[in-house]
Length: 277
Image 1 (cartoon, rainbow, N blue to C red):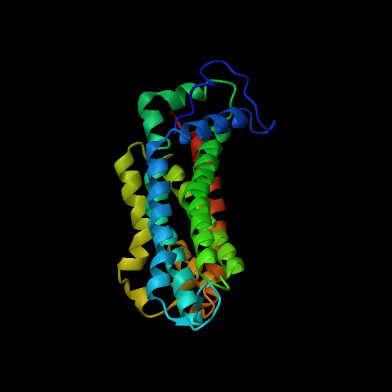
Image 2 (spheres, rainbow, N blue to C red; image 1 turned 30 degrees about the horizontal axis):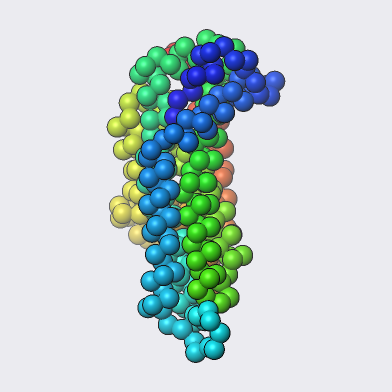
């Protein structure tokens, strides 16, 4: 997404007094997002995948005999249905939001747009915060809200007793995931000036704790409760009825992720404020 257009055309910089220019930059980011083909593709792909989940479950899941038109799934089958939904959004959505955000700053820096924008009556903090806010909001709407709405509508149409409150709670956890990853990737764009290092580090931060068997992790399960890379797991735990031994992770992981998001934000803003562009 590119923060040009209105700023380039001389439109007044709007936003809070302590964040001059945030409003116009955020508005431009959102309008650019609506024209991003990859965002549209991600939304369509995620929606189609999630639409298949209840359709397949209606043909294969274990049901309880019932005379009503809608199927009555067993508790385990319902847990499987919502767990698959949360897992798909959590794990595939992570790749999508990273791919959608990876060039948020690097592209404009390479073109000299970033250095030009900050010479205008806008704060550097406004530039960075508008990037994070816009990408996070677009990720939440395009990857979580729209596909989940389709999934929930189809599930309610096919099954009885769909746990919409648990789906809503899990969607909140997935939204925290979108915010954390958007902040992480944009923050990496402050010290790093090219796309590939940003992409590799973001993927390493997210997936390495899951796939790399570090000795310290093998001896203890504490990482289950704190690593942001377990946000998809936390979403699954929030969605299902039987949470098992790691039930507390549904609360602790999002809380830690919110704290780390704030730390990343403060560090990135501090560095960007002093950085030579």
